[in-house]
Image (cartoon, rainbow, N blue to C red; front, side, top):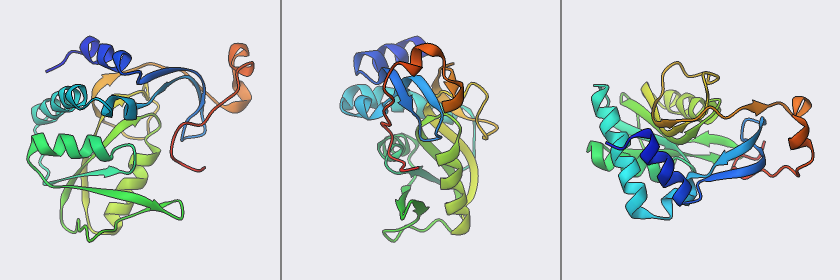
Amino acid sequence: MLTEEETIEILKKTNSLLEGHFILSSGLRSEKYLQCAQLMMYPDLAEKVCHSLAEKINNEKIDFDLVASPALGGLLVGYQVSKYLKVPNIFVERVNNEFTLRRGFDCKNKKILIIEDVITTGKSSLECSKCLQNFGGKIVGYACIVDRSDGGSKINKVISQVSFNIPVYSENELPKHLKNIEAIKPGSRKN
């Protein structure tokens, strides 16, 4: 299993940790952004990180029979981790800016572990959960590569490969140094 330090080194090596002024999918602002899509560009390194996350999940002894991820960010992570956990994998995707289950996927009466790339507020994971519950699934846990919530997530317990304490700010409470940097929105959510 990788240590947090080893994981951080991989994130740095793959340019997955960016610096600037970012608008997160939650609407909050940050001077650092974790772009795990950059990690996924390097299958050998992504495999190491996802395998390590799968080991952490196994150590938690959670009873589940399906992995689900919100597309697009969690898609590859969920797939890779489900491969190590030897359970089926599905994903939800946005249609008209709301998550839905498509492509013939079924989750009725399934115990589901939600897997994401990054969790900050937990909004995408919780939207994913609500969608799957509407289709008859039971959510039993949450996991991600990076937990950057620092206790600010609406999810009580998250299994993560690495945790970061990266401050986030509302647009009205930006520190001076961020006010002078143009904000960019690198995520996939429209609002």
